[in-house]
Length: 135
Image (cartoon, rainbow, N blue to C red; front, side, top):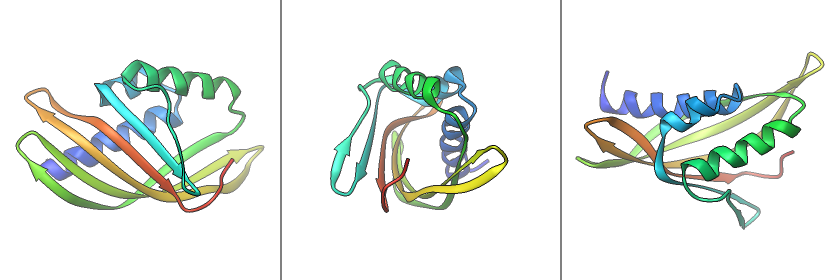
C-alpha cells in the first residue's frame, strides 16, 4: 500500500469509527494531541483538544443521535508530504438514514494533517469547512 493510500485508510477508519460509534476505532486514528475544527458560515467550532477531548465530544453526540450517519470521502489530494507528516484534502458528503429514509446532511471539504512515525500515520489536525448548514 502506498503512503497516500495508507493516509486515506486512516481518515476512512476515523470516519468509520464516527459512523459506527466506535470510540476505540476513533482513538486508534488520532494523535494524542489531535485537534478537530469545523467552520460553518465563517464561525469556528471545535471540541476540546486532544484525543480524549475529541472522543468525549463524539460520545456525547452519539448519546443524542437518532439516525445512522455515513461520511463519504472523495477527491483525495495530497497538498504536501515530508518524512514526518502530510496534508491531504478530501471532499465530504454526509448522509443520514432514519426510519428507512435517506437524506443528505452536509457537504464540505476536509483538510487533514497527519503525523508519520514508525508506528504509522495518525491524524494530527482535522479542519472541516462546510458548504452550508446541516443538522
